[in-house]
Length: 293
Image 1 (cartoon, helix red, strand yellow):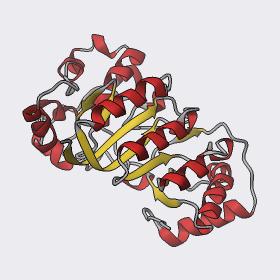
Image 2 (image 1 turned 180 degrees about the horizontal axis):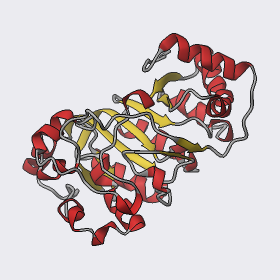
Image 3 (image 1 turned 30 degrees about the vertical axis):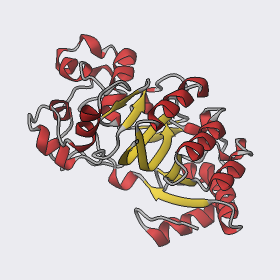
Image 4 (image 1 turned 90 degrees about the vertical axis):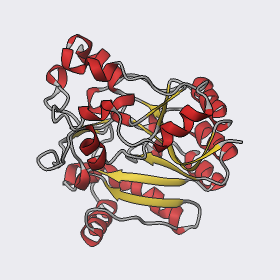
């Protein structure tokens, strides 16, 4: 019998078409690649025999850069039909994935579009894609959420690039208590990781030569939970609070929260009614809201 768990997530792409400063998945450092469905789909099938999440989220990076995104959406619905399932995207590739809305509709998977800034250049890129989603929502085809993500952004590390370093507060329980990733158990490389900053740190370290930095060694040696772990270890993984590796993140958020610089996008700016609609939505709904069918 699978263990009932509150939440599980999986990045199906490490690559992102935006570079948002301070990304908790380190996607601002252009981590390479996507997760092929042949590999990632097997991880999901394997873990579906061990766990049954109340909520399962597919994200990235930018998941719409994975050409097999609809396979993941359909697989998750097949494995966990009772779960609330979400696909989290920055939305800037929605028009290039015409079959995705049909898959979301057929599987009753929620599309969550994250909105990162409120400046004109960015919104003009995003607005035509949001309009597609809103039209599908208004037609009763999909469940849609629009989320302002930049209002609760904070850095889980100090410095930038090769000068990136962990925090040194030395208070793992306080770090865990402050953490926005408490429930974000992450499936990567067939194993379960406590949170995205730990799960994707090895990828960032390989890109930024961090393995030679002594301060990162306690965190780069973190061991995720393997599929073959016994039931006792599995239960402990989902019930424990802090672990020693939590100390890499800040013990308090004061001074770490900011509105990130956002670059990239890959879509030519298009001004017009759609961008005006989106600006009105932002003005009406503030920093964080959900817009569900």
